[in-house]
Amino acid sequence: MNWLSSRSAEHPVSLIPTSLMAIFIAVGLGSCEAGPDSPATNKISTDGPVVQPVSQPAIPQSTVKQTSSKRSGAHSRRDPHAQLTPDKQLQVALQHLAEGRTQLAMNTLNQAIGNYPDSAELYGVRGSLFLEQGSSAAALADLNRAVELAPHNPAFLNNRAQAFRRFERTKEALADLDHAIELDSHFVAARFNRGTIAFNAGKYSQAMTDFDACVAADPQSAAPYFNRASVHDAMGHRELAIADLNRFLEIADSEQWKNVAKALLLKWENTDNSAAKSDQS
Image (cartoon, rainbow, N blue to C red):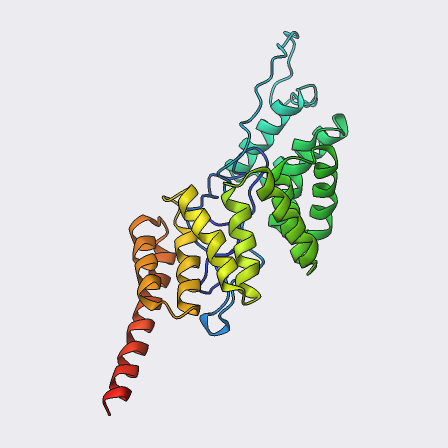
């Protein structure tokens, strides 16, 4: 699956980008697998997967040359990564994650943070990994440290907002999301997450503003269309909701989520047909 959690339901959920790049290839906005709450609740889940951000710094490239010709081999007792620069160790960790070696990735991050305790990027990525693993307290501690070291990084603020939400600290989450959007008004993940909070609070106009901004900033990302369809439907705009779900079906990669969208369209069609028959009787 391309989303990092797997629950059954109907609405794409919260987006949690890493500070540098998607922690896994599996985390694209256009790939929506996993799940939010049931449609009966009319609520978008607040506890979602990690998704690739649209606005993010590139992975820094080290300018430090390898000066030692006696690097230990991969299976040596001496860790060949121990003397790497922070960005290189981060790349090693991300490579482990991309290839499914989660524990090795965590070990690499732990070692790197021990060597470089002032690297915001290392804390940011480890915090995101803790968040994905459900270790909310550890995630919040790391993301607090990342924000302390890099207070103007919108991705760290967005991720910390997701950690706050795990503890139902919605006011603090909104403050972080507002700040992230002030720093980068086109940051899709922060807009999406703020829109999710607004939707769950019944503030549909506010939610629509943020989901509209998501679509405008990245029209090829599928998930915002799905959630915007939910808002349109909640506001009584069924035709617009159907249009957004149809667009979602055109561009989404996940067959699982396409099936969910098709089922929702069928449900709406049946509801509309029943209402029409009632009007005629």
